[in-house]
Every structure is written in structure tokens, then in C-alpha cells.
Image (tube, rainbow, N blue to C red; front, side, top):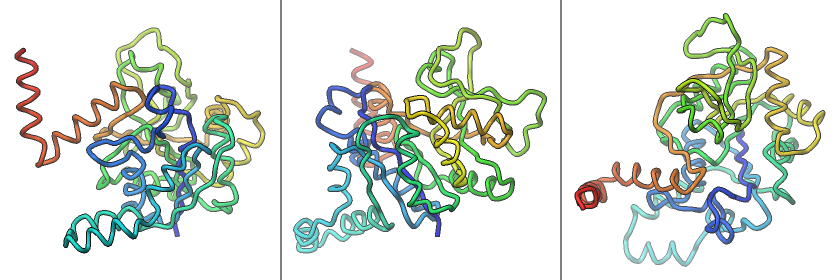
Length: 285
């Protein structure tokens, strides 16, 4: 039985004013909420139990995954078996919820999952990035963790101009890259980088042993608690990064959300051609 924790308690400041009333994780991408993509990605990776750490004002996340008898009856009457199957996929895992009383950072959210994890290895996922459900990044991270015993996270190349939106990675010097895996020396959390053209950043997909909680418990609760815990692991030579070069959509901001919707709409056979025609028309105006 593999477990996962999703951090979904942030206030979504980069997507205001929408997130004043609607949880960021419920915002639609390609007609489906962000949180649904993440749950499906975890289910495809073999996860059976998922804890969603949300905020007290994010009841819509729980409502989305709750049963909807009237809707299901209406779909059955219509004979819409495709929609019924799709709804069933969203609840094919055991979902648990806990509320973060205040948005005190990722570390504080993760600490609430200690009892749920119960000493086991687990996935930890942030809700800023949407990955293809059929991808294998999570399985690769799990395999590396099992083989090496190290905590492991996914890294992704980003333009230096976007470094203030990510945790930027410093790799250990003079270390060999084996199967796209490399030890991490330090993570700089959302700081502008003065030079260079490209950086490697943390993607928001992790596999941890339960001793991550020991690191968190030694640190004061703050926005930087999680990054400090990662850097403590790196200082102990216990943290590695796996380079990921596949598709992903970052929704940390209005432009990112718009790009994500366009990218997924261009892959949908029902919307791809009409959208291309519309975009060509707008570009010609």
C-alpha cells in the first residue's frame, strides 16, 4: 500500500482575485480541476491512499470528490456511461482530508501528515504543477528512493528569468550524473538569479522517508521551513534530484493558468482545431 500527501492549503495569492472565493486546486484546466489531475497522476503511479492537506476555506475540494447521487442518476437516465466512468476514476483511491488552520507554509502542511504516513515512505506532491496522468515520473522517483535510500525530488530546467518563482537547485560539485540523478548541495527558495541563462528548479514531486518529519520538527514554523528541511537533508548528503524533461504545466500565476488551458485544449480532439483557427485569426488581427 503506497501513500501520498498533497499540499493544498495555500491561499493562492498569485491567482487573486479568483482565489479569494475559489480554491486554486479547483480552478479548471481543460475542463477539469487541477486537483483531479494530481489525484489521477498518483493513482496511475499505484497510490492507494491520499491525504489532502487543505485550508479551512477549501470545502470545494472535498465536495468535488464526494459522491453525487442525483448527478449520477441523471447520467444513468441519459445513458452517459462515458461520464459515469470518468467520475468514477476521480474517486478510485481512498481520499482523506485534514485542514491546515492557517497558511503557514508547506512545512507546516506536511507536518500534519505525520500520523497518516505512520513511519512509511510516501509521495509528497505540490499543486502548482500539472503533469500528464500517463507519465512515469512518480514511479521513477519511487524506484530511485527504494534503490538508494535517499530522499529524492524532481528537477526541471527553467529560464533564469523565472527563478524567483521556484526553488533553484545547486548540484553537488564534481559528482557524476547517473541515469539523470544527481546529489543536491542546496536549494535557493524563490530568489532572483543574477546570471546565467538556465537553472534547474524543484518541480514539486517528492519521495520521502518518514524521517523528513524529524527535520521539520527541529525547525520553526515559517514559509521557509520546508526549504530549510530540504537543505538540512542536502547537508547530510541525503537528497538527490531526478531531471525531468517531459511536459508539465505550472499554474502559479494568471499567465501560467492561461498557458495550461491552451496547451491542454490543443491536445483535446474536440477543441484543438477550432482553437488553432481562433488563435490564427487573433494573430492575424
